Every structure is written in C-alpha cells, then in structure tokens.
Image (cartoon, rainbow, N blue to C red; front, side):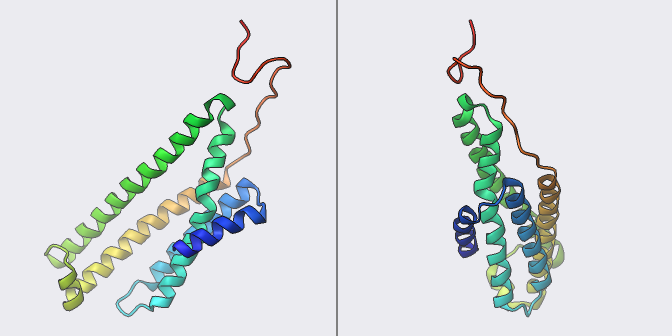
Length: 178
C-alpha cells in the first residue's frame, strides 16, 4: 500500500489532473481496491492478489491525501489558510483513529460472535473455526469500508471548483475597510 501511495502521490503532480478528476480517480481506485480485496478474502487467498489490491488502494489514497488539503485551502479565505490546513489534517488524523477503532471493534465482535471466544493469533493460525471467524470479520470490515468509499465517490462526483471574489483594489488581503 505504501508503494502505491508514494508512486501515486509523485505521479499526480506530474499528471496535472484537475482536482475533481484526481478526486474521482482516487476514490474510484480505492473503491475498486476494496472490491478486489473482498474478492480475495477467503482462507486460500493468493497473497499476490491481496498485495496487488493493496497497491491499488495506495494509488487511490495517494491521489486523495494531498488533493483534500488543496480543496480545503482553495475554499478558505487567504487569512485563514493556516487554520484550514491544520483543521483538515486534524480531521484526517481523527478519522483515521476513529475508523481504525470502529472497524477493529467490528472485526473483533464478528469474530467473537462466530467463534464464541476472544480473538488470538494462536487460535487463528491453528483452529479452522477461528480462521473462518476471522475471514468473516474481515469480509464485514472491508464491506463497511467499501460502502464508505462509495459514499465518498458520490461526494467527489458532486465536487465543484470554488471561485474566490477578486480583492478590492488598494486593500491588503485580510484587511477590512474602516
């Protein structure tokens, strides 16, 4: 995933895509990757297929991370750029933490409901029922994540450029007329 994220981030600067195109491409790639991961989730999954899907997920996120900051900065007045940039980074971090906690909790609950025991690496690697419960939990996690990314794709499809009014002549940015 890190390889796809890095390559996509570097390539997006060279491709010079519009913000909307980049957002649509990134969310589409992420949605396709999550769909591919769902197809790969079974007990005899090919590690190469999973790795390929994770690279594609990284490509999608690589298109999104920097562009989301650009969208927020374009929408913010010049005198509030620092606040806007800090705000988007804060909410990206918060979303990552909350998303990981929520999806991890879902995985744990599905596993426990399937097996009747708490999740453990030893059980998953040595007991077929535990492995089946883990696979079912992973399916739920990636289904929920896929639904969230599809919702993000719908939002990205509605994204329109923000136009700022031209500053009045003779006024420095951020200064009001007294």
